[in-house]
Image (cartoon, rainbow, N blue to C red; front, side, top):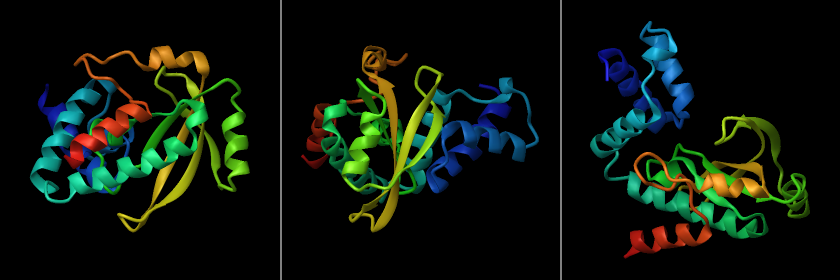
Length: 197
């Protein structure tokens, strides 16, 4: 890691934790603030996650575990609501680095891409459709909703990323550290049970 990458990671980690910025946006913003340019100067997501964990340990150790548990419980509610679409939780809520400023990212694996949208309409859920970069690097449709989290007493962004049913196989490949990048409802229930024990 270069000194520039460390500087960018340190600044970006603060924004990830305190403002809920996504890694890519936080790294670009930090590089711009520090007057550093070029993609080579940006730290990897793995390095940034490590610095985020350090930041949480120093500045949020007393509040973050309860915030994370509240977000995971809210994610479980939405996963159960949308169980027919084989939901998987990813991002900071799955990896354990989420705070009350983090959004929830659920990946839905659908036979028909419009079926999740129809399910939200049937449940009278207001959503905003958008296009985002998915885990394969390609653009995917996302349906974003605001969900009230009673435990945190605030609205949380819940983003439902729509994938084809067959994409679920690629979604379960482990990362360089042998960790699953996302988990299904059963895996999330297991995490919640371990946290409450």
